[in-house]
Every structure is written in C-alpha cells, then in structure tokens.
Length: 328
Ligand code: RIB
Image: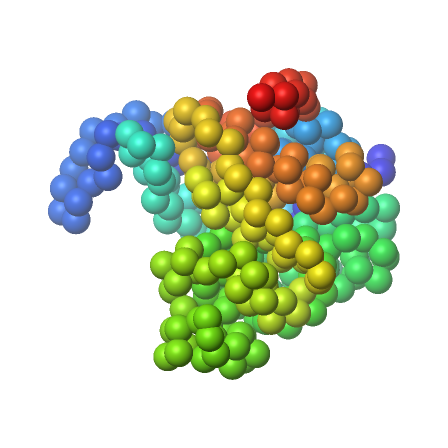
C-alpha cells in the first residue's frame, strides 16, 4: 500500500457535549453527549482519506483497545492506520463543549500521543508520501524528525502548529514547507520570532511592537504577507475562521474568503481545512492556491455537521459543493 498523504499525529477520544450556552465558572448546564474519534492528526487524516486520497495515519494509543475499536471507522473512510501501543500511557482524551452558535471549548489530555517517538515510525512508511503532515499534539522532537526525514525524501512537509504549547520548538519550522496556523497560533508564532519583532516596530505596525489578534485583523494584505515572510517558511497559510484564509508564498499572496454556510459545529474545522489542503495538493498537482481553495470547501462542509472526524465530507460532496459555489 502506497499512501500519497502520511499524517503523523494525535489520536484522541472526543467527549463532546452540546449545550445552548457554555457553563459559567461554578455553573452546571444540561447538554447532549456525543463521544467520537478525534485528535487533530486523526481528523486531518480522515479528511484527506474521505477526499479520496490514499492516506496513512501513524499515531499512538494506550493499551485500552482504542486502536482495535477505531479500525472499522478508519477502514470505512478508506484510511490506513499504523497505531503504536504505549502501555504506560492512556489514550488521549478531550472534553469538548459546543454552544448553540457552534463555537467550541476544548480541554485535551495528550496521553499516549506524547509517547510517540521517532523509533516508532518505520521509515518505509514515510518514503512514498507526496505530502507529510504533522500537528502540535505530538512531541516536538518527533515532529522535527518526521518533517526532516520527509523533506529528505522529497515530500512536501506541512505543519499545523495546533495547539501552540509552551514547549514549542521553533526548530521544527526549518523542515516545514507549508505552515498552517490559525489566528491565535500565528499571533503566538509572530511574538516569539526575533525578525518579526524588528519588523513590528516599524510602520504600518504598532510602534510599540505589540501584536494581538486584533492587530492581525486590522493589517493590510501586504503587511500580513511581510509578517508571514519573517517566519522564514516557504508557504504560510493563516486560517481566519469565518474570514477565510490568507495564503503567503515567497513572491505572491492571496486572500480566500470562507464559504457562507449554516454552522452547526466548528470543532475540527481547522482539521478539515488542513486535511483537505493535503488532499488538494495531491489532487491539484501541488498548486498551493488551488489546494487552499479546495481546503476551504472541505472546512465549510465540515462545520455543517456535528463532531470532528465524523464531520469530514467525502470527495463526491466536495466536488458537488465546489461546482455549485464556483458557478454562482
Ligand atoms: O481540532 C479538534 C480536535 O482538537 C478535537 O478532535 C480534539 O481531540 C482536539 O485534539
């Protein structure tokens, strides 16, 4: 089996609660409970596989039978899996609350995901990939190893630095060709980047050099592009939620609007975008802008359904959606 997309990342059991309003501190609210498979890595792998691209997911679980239980779901999506069991860890778990507006709050325990080490990743599994994808729910040394190896193999390396953890190691950016942060992750990356700091003290940025999500939203496309360039990664795609995304390549940039759809649950929308982007790269001959356009459709379809991995659309739905929207 040769996989065009290989995702090395997290598998998490999502414990999702749907309620009208988020509980305030000290308050108890009643909601609907829907458990399901998740984890940013697994969600992204499901998105790529359901988009019709041969995809392999490599991840770690505890010895609680998760790997066994999840196989039928992965198989139905056409996803190949390589689970490593970590008996000393528990499988990752997340408590997710979703309010009536489809917004979410997540607490995650990464568990076995942080136990996935370079020695757990057989080199031949990475070798045939056109695109190799990692996220911030793995050990940073493992992410660095995977991206470095994949790049040596000639694959396109994609990093979704979500969530930005305090231990973030900027060295992983050296092996990254496409970086896909959301607004808060981009803000955090900019704040810890020395050359960004120098740029931020010049006009049209804030003279005090401060950078917040509000500052980010107020930037012109040209100013945002210059900031992306400071991160020294060939391609930076900032996802901006309902505002769409911003794609910065060395000499060219583009803003892509989000599709206006009825939102049920935004949880996993970023994962739908990233997995859809990886699939789009393979489908669309590595064209970055076209892959980002494809990814926006995958994300739009995912927010119309509840859940994370289960909300990822299939290739036929994506094609139908794009056909309709592109002819409007
Ligand atoms: O991006 C959504 C995912 O974040 C959820 O599936 C949850 O497991 C957390 O990893």
